[in-house]
Amino acid sequence: MTVRIGTRASKLALTQTQQTADQLAAVGGFPVELVHIRTEGDVLKGSLSQMGGTGVFVAALRDALLHDKCDVAVHSLKDLPTGPALGLSLAATPKRVDVRDVLCARDGLKLADLPSGASVGTGSPRRAAQLRAVRPDLDIRDIRGNVDTRLGRVPGLAGNSNGAVVDGKSGDLDAVVLAAAGLHRIGRLDAVSEYLETDVMLPAAGQGALAIECRTADAPRRAGSTEGSQGVLAQALAALDDQDTRLAVTAERALLARLEAGCAAPVGAYAYRKGSMLYLEAVVCAVDGTATVRDKKATDGLTEVGATLLGIELAEVLLARGAADIADLTAS
Image 1: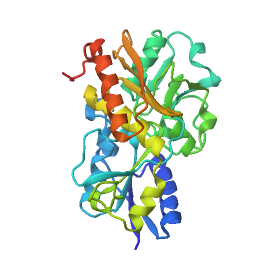
Image 2: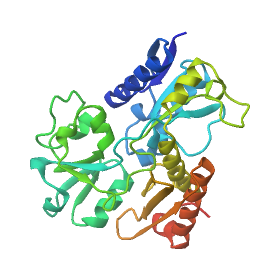
Image 3: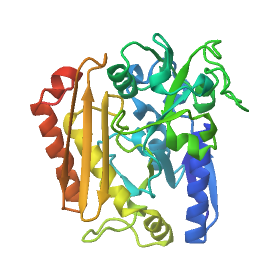
């Protein structure tokens, strides 16, 4: 049996999918092959928020799974919509890597050192809002493109980039903000001038984690469930699942779902387990950075149900403090 693994064709997607494929093959003892799927997000131009958020990168991969064009799909978990996908299951969440965002600036400048009016590029309303909150004097610009393309817009950071130039622009920004995890996976941490700690910038829900999705019939059978499989692929997927990562991202995604915020909203969330407790901190920002609501909660319920309740409860706290008003959320 050859397991077909669906992936986008970007450098980052191919790298993280190949790493996952190698792990699955090693654990399961079966051959694997990568299937390249072109998604709507790879074709359309314009900002992600205008296209409907990062979920545009997921739909085609899910369609390929449902139509038996691949057996497994690998996503950046922060791209995964919070709603259920009929017929599909989140089969594994491998151990999470660095959740932080990073500043990649010319001349190795840090956020505090950027001159007033400096141009900083990001495609994320969450990053843009938190940047404006701490440095309202910066010129925050909406950008698109893969990691190499974005780095190429900062003088001195192009490296061996083979990314396409966006709208003829290259070396036109003072800095860009990216996820540490993505740079780590493609070997470009050399471009980082500063790691932005979570007290400055909370990451997106699921940032730093991967989501391995498959058809529900092929997924590992969960305790107390009759759905799923106990076959070779299911066992290999179960072996890649990290329970602490699953609990953390479950809490973060439950918070997003209750806020009805979506993955492109100006919402940051970070959960982590420490000892017998699961902690969750979240922030909701006005897009212009002029207002933020931030809070945190913890639980000793170290189950997916406990993590889900933690996310919902913290969302309720944020809503009670006016989060829906400042970020124009649709939660009622």
